[in-house]
Amino acid sequence: MIRSGFGGGRALRVALLIVSLGLLLPQAASALGLLVLKGANTSPEFAKVVPFSRCEEFAVNYKVQVTGSGEKVYLISEVFGMVEYDPVLLAVDLVDLQDYAPLLEVVERTRVLETRYPAVRNESQRFLKPIMEVLLLRDQGMVQFEGRWMTRASYDRIKEEQRQKQKDTRAMTEALERTRKLEIQRQEEEAKAMMQTAANRVKAEEQTRVEEEDRRRAAQKKMEEEQEKEAQLLAEKRAQEEKEQSRLRVNWNRIGGGPTAALLKAEWETLQGWYRAGRETFPGMELPGAAEALLVQQHFAKGSTELPAVLGSTQPATWMESADGHRLMIRVVRTTEAGDTPRSGLLMAFQVPTDAKGGPVAGEELRGLTAVVGDVSRELQRALPRAMTVALTSLPQAGALSQRVPLTVGEASGYLTVSRPLLGEDGSYHLILLVALGLTEDRAAAPLKAR
Image (cartoon, rainbow, N blue to C red; front, side, top):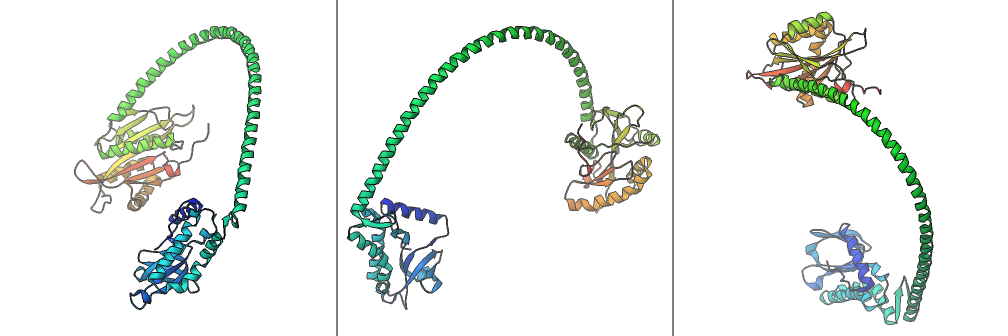
């Protein structure tokens, strides 16, 4: 596309502004122009000329708004040449020679096309008419300034008035600056006087402060001696507590091996995290004495290990294991006021073999799970199969390593967690089922009440 090249001056600045704005938009020009197209053959004598008021250039064609004929598209291979200009060039300040350079270049390019393509002569006079009228005014000694034409003398007079206004403005600014400096000097002198008065007052206040400080230090020394005694007693108490907590943490790090213990510990740490985040994850339950005896003596009879106190309980949690090591349990008891029944929470882990489809296989492990839950609550034993079915059905859809589902029956409520099949130490795949009683899973947990 043949574009008008700009010279210096105000017209150059306006042209550059137009180009820069064009870079932010699709390549289109709101301009007046002539498009030279091939005619019956490639000979210049048969070329056709299309006047347009807007042109967009694409990779293989031009899309132009043909004057009086609507929008049309021409292939680049069909175009001999083009000349165009933005009408805004006629409205800018036209004073000096460089201001007319873009217009003169449009005229020159049009004349070049006239010599090459005779058909251009039929449209060039109308196309160049606005430019030629401007050039005629220029030849008559007129200039265009701030949107209107005037004589060179009128322009010089306006510029002289502007220079005088600038000179008057500078004089006024200098006078205001002198006044401002005098005001600053006056304020500085007042500030010095105020500072001297303030210094005298500070000196007197300092004397009073020193005397008060001596009295305060005497009282502070006495209080520090008392606090030191209290701190020593507290440090001894904390050291003993830290020693106990360290022992419990060592117990936690040592316990359990294999995927079942790992998943149980991970779930327990998750519950602790929820509790620290302000959720009531341990409403607790009243564990019947018979159920407690069966859990400890029959199902999880392989000793017990104390763990750090968690979930708001003031007593340590307890890790228990079945005799065969296939079932694991963490128990925590919430201490209550005298006369109230303690609230217990259980988190039990079971390893159950899977079939080829990943479902649980009926056997000793599954019967052991049912027996443990039944010894706590017969209602929970009846609710367990349904909860397992829900978890196993939703686990593939959730796309997670494990799935939690509610397990709620009256007082002994909680949730069930089922893992994806995991490879066990015996080389076969197992499901790991976590049964939480007296513990609340996260989605059903409510924030702790403010205390």
